[in-house]
Length: 263
Picture 1 (spheres, rainbow, N blue to C red):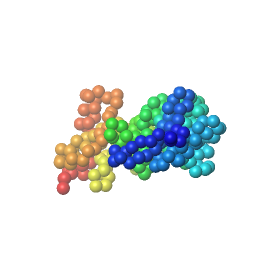
Picture 2: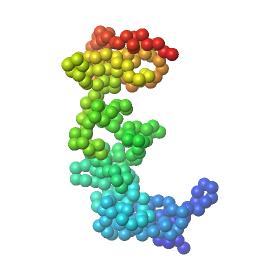
Picture 3: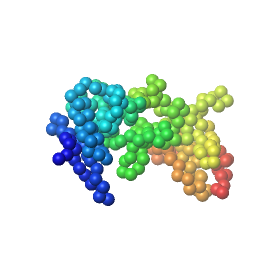
Picture 4: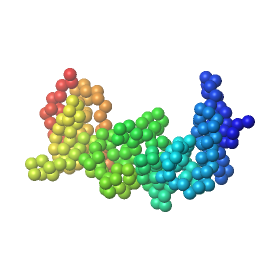
């Protein structure tokens, strides 16, 4: 007879392993897979004790744990807030926390709760992303931040905390690809540039929209000259097709772009 909370299972190759689970508030909660029965039972005992205790998320790691950190968060949230998520979310009165690991916690608005309760956050270097239909989707794209945007140049966290991903804390400075506001010869202008083998300046323009359209025009020119690189073009809101075409045709583009030769 197996120990409490333990179920035997078999891998495709016939290898035996053990699963742990328990039931709380009429919900069956899986606790994970283990190589031996004793560890699976220890996870079950730990989960039962956690439900009956006042231990917090911060208490994880005070002792050797059989539960994963992610499962610890899920159980604590269910105990305290009566809602179970499969991702490591803890509800607060006006926002929620996503506990990536014991050291890093991200804050989100409740408007994003459904999304992150069904999408696990992953990290590559400094970039946060989720897997959606087999594709890696940057979390920052939900805020309108472009793929190659740079923190401090293209967007900022108003309170200085880059783990606070609530909408009110994020300000987009440069919302268009290839556009940056700067000072040139004492004038405040928008510089459009494009990366080929290093950055090439397309031109400097009085408005952000003109710079964004100039970037699109540069992409079209480069493609027409045989460059097959996949550039992200800018979508310009609040301009009719006629207005867009008029600006597109009148904007000047640097000679380096106009005379680009694909090697």
